Image (tube, rainbow, N blue to C red; front, side):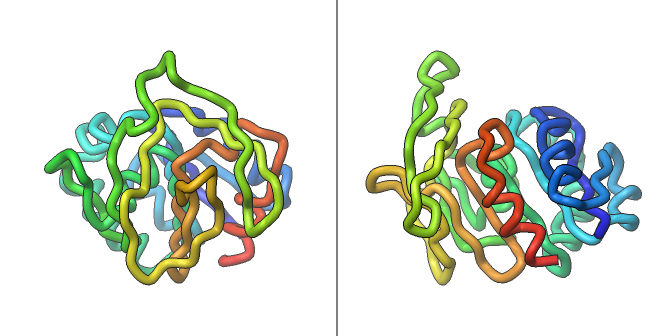
Length: 181
């Protein structure tokens, strides 16, 4: 199983290491043409507007087509890109999962935190860095919560998390994603 990790910004290397640890052939994707070699894709955190600028219209179209057919996992900014709509921005998204997201809803960089949430009813450490918030959702499976907030969802072959599972020791989010391939 060949899993690409979009390597334009963010901690893409942590995702690559985690996927390799779980047995996937993980490689870095820096150009839309490299998507052809991928069975699935991870879109890491970073700054969503920067992703849009770096990808350009052609790159966004390539990601949109990829997400329509193959498994994609977006964390933090990746979840923003995958969303159907944004609450506070006209930035383009991929519209790959039926969620509405508010960017930077947990505050600025200084407000970053490690919290205890639940993944499918069991405790999970969650790292939030300038995290978005899922403010509404349609027909999705809720995978994880933190307090009253839904922080990870799945719809078909698309998974979105507002936190950074690659920065904790818990492998369950990545393992669930790999099970979709």
